[in-house]
Every structure is written in structure tokens, then in C-alpha cells.
Length: 122
Image (cartoon, rainbow, N blue to C red; front, side, top):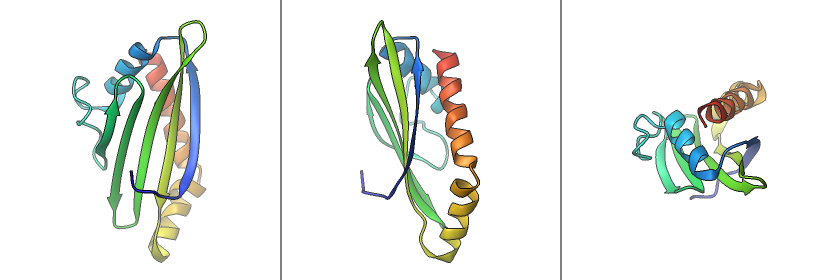
């Protein structure tokens, strides 16, 4: 993955094994849960390492970005699901876009909501 500036990381402990959380991650994030390459619009699949890592990247006029989910074993059959974000926002329009998306807290809300949906699906 191309190095982009780090934005943030959000994590959630889920009471399910990694295989189950992986399936839930694909169910929530992909149009076809059997095919990791069907990530949401605005993203393309960077890598899918079952059941440990799903990396996506994307770009548009105002930014280049990446979102990576990592799954780690956590005691007693649980899984720690982490969502890491990177992004570059060049130029004046990029700075304005970053302020709207990151600075407003909207990104944090969306990522945490995704983690809760994945937990519920697991």
C-alpha cells in the first residue's frame, strides 16, 4: 500500500472468533460477501488476507485514502477488530474537504458505526 498520512484507528472487541468476524466484515463491507473484491463504491480492494486483514484504497478529486481492517485473536475466543485510516488531502479544496470529513467528526462516527454493524453481524 502506498504510504499516506495516518488519520486514526478505531477498535472494538468482539465476542466471536476471527473466522466469524471475518465473515461479518465481508457481509457488512462487500456487495457479495463471498467476494472481497466487491468493496463499496469509492474503494478498490488492496488486499484480503483471510481471516486477518482487509485493505481498501480509493481516490477522488479532493483526496487519496485507505481503510484497513485488522483482526487479532483476543483471549477466550474473542477478536479485536481494528479499523485504520490514512489519507492525503492536497490543495485548498483538499484541506476544506478534510475539515468537513475528518475535522467535523463525521469520519469517526461512520467508522465506529461500521464496527458496531460488524459486531452485530458476528
